[in-house]
Every structure is written in C-alpha cells, then in structure tokens.
Amino acid sequence: MAYTLPPLPYATNALEPHIDTMTMEIHHGRHHKTYVDNLNKALENQPALAAKPIEQLIREINQVPESIRQAVINNGGGHLNHTMFWEIMGPGGGGKPSGPLADDIAATFGDFGQFQAQLKQAGLGRFGSGWAWLVLAGGKLQIISTANQDNPSMTGQVPILGVDVWEHAYYLKYQNKRADYLDAWWNVVNWAKVAERYSRAKAGTL
Image 1 (spheres, rainbow, N blue to C red):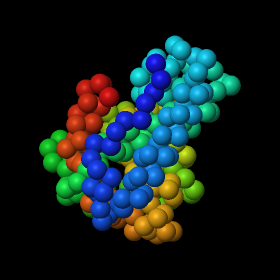
Image 2: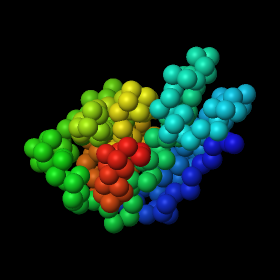
Image 3: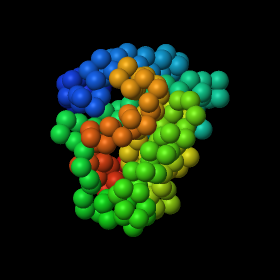
C-alpha cells in the first residue's frame, strides 16, 4: 500500500504571520509530496517494506536493502519528519508547555528559557540542511540536531518535537535569518500535541 501525503490539520494561512502562506503551500504541497512520491518509487519492488507504518520503516532502517536505504532515509525520513512537523504546530499556538512535559523540561534544562536557547542553538549550529530536536533517549530528554532528513528514531531516540531548518522552511519570509525564523517558530508550537507525543513516548507507544 502506497504512502500518502497527509492533509494539513489547518489552513495554509493559519500560521501567519510567523510562517507565511506561500511557504506552507510549497513546503507541504510540493516538498512533502515529493518525499512521499520518491519513497513510493524507491519501494515499488518491496511490498513488505511498503506495508510498514512509516514510523516502523524508519526505526528499522537497517532492515532496508542497502541499495535503496539512502533513498528511504532521505524520502521516508522527509515524510515522517514533516508529518510530525505539521502536527506539532497550529494556529493559536505558542506559550509554554504544562504538566509532566513542563516539569521534565525544567528539571533537565534549568527552565523553559534555557530549553528554548539550547534548541535554537542546535538549529543555528546545524550547518546546511537538517533539523533540531527534543528527543527522549534512555528515559531522559535531550536536544540534538540531525542532517538532511535523518530521524532520531534511526538511532533509538524518540522524537518529541522537531523544527525544520532546511532553507525551504523559512527562506521566502526570513531569507538567511534562520535565527529570526527559530524565534518566531515558538509562536506556532502546539504544546498540547507535543505533550501528547511525550506521554506516548514515555509509555512506549510512539
């Protein structure tokens, strides 16, 4: 069964003014769609692999034949990363998390401001294209960055939150000012969805 492009859970203009409409239209409708199309093409002769949920496919990336593994990482990772990205953003977002996620962020990073600063630095420090992540690793929260469309699950970490720092995610509005994009991005984070991911990660169901 072929992978499909998930619909955005909100209108393309819903994240204005922080993420502009045209960026959302191109990012979702073209970039994400291309990842899905190329993933299906890479797996067209691998029906057993193509039948796996995308999370499982990427988590078990070492079971993918070496001849197509990088294509699956690039495109399957792109599909998985962006599916999460759309879900953890939304109109009326921003603010701060609450509950166990907020408590554990404070316990791990000192306070929410320090957490934001460290995630921003992970995004700024990623040379070229990639992502900055909050992950659950060994039962503890950790901030990492990955190149291209690599997903933390490939190395046994569970992504809780991730911000796309590919230029196509911000260049139309912010040009080369990645820092400004990262600052603005906090205004669209849907903390309820992030907290839900964290709860599932701790329960081992994510």
